[in-house]
Length: 327
Image 1: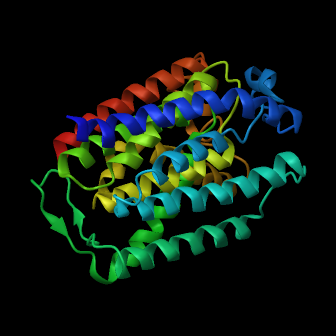
Image 2 (image 1 turned 45 degrees about the vertical axis):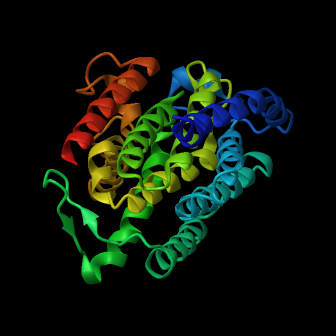
């Protein structure tokens, strides 16, 4: 019991307390540095949020890093996950810093962001294949534990999965508490699996759960702080690296379906807009804004921000239950 407390319960409590204690210090500092969010003009209900401090993901990062460093010596399998969290978190921080502090409207140019993400992914891929003792085979959902060896497709799939997941979480961060709520459920799913399989990564998944619960106290509607790319990219790095350490990247298609829908909605909108010279499939993307502006059909009364977050969270909860059944 004491062993379970030390590796499961304590990381949750520690990361939660660090987040809760640091946030009242960091939020006023971000406000003083004028690290305010700029909202899209099309979203009238969001205009009151303009100026709300962003880059709050720094608190999540610090809580996870501090907590994880207390365990990493005894749990070396946490290293690639911690690397992905920090690596993508730093990319997000640089992007946020350029946008909100130096007032460069675009932040990192698209090719710069993609190049940095590619470098982090290459390092992760090399570590997984040359250093880690975790095989690159993937557990197939609903097969009773059967595995698939992608062979020569291993690296293309890994790069596609990493970039897709990281940017999916990034797109999900558009409403108060949305990315935090969805990801804390996904992190809880991975924690249950990690504990059940004795994977040796439990402390860091628990730390992410604790950090996100603490952050939600300040991030739920009406948000006092946003996580920014600093937090969303770091969480994306966490989700995909944890999935690979558990040999479950295919399960992201189930438990992370919300991330997938957010990315696909943007791709469909951009493609259709270009092909039809200005027509749209959705009222606005990512898709959570479509629900805000017109409900499910896009023609009725829009959903409130809190309703969108609640529905997406309930859907993710059900998907996580399906994910457990798929093992």
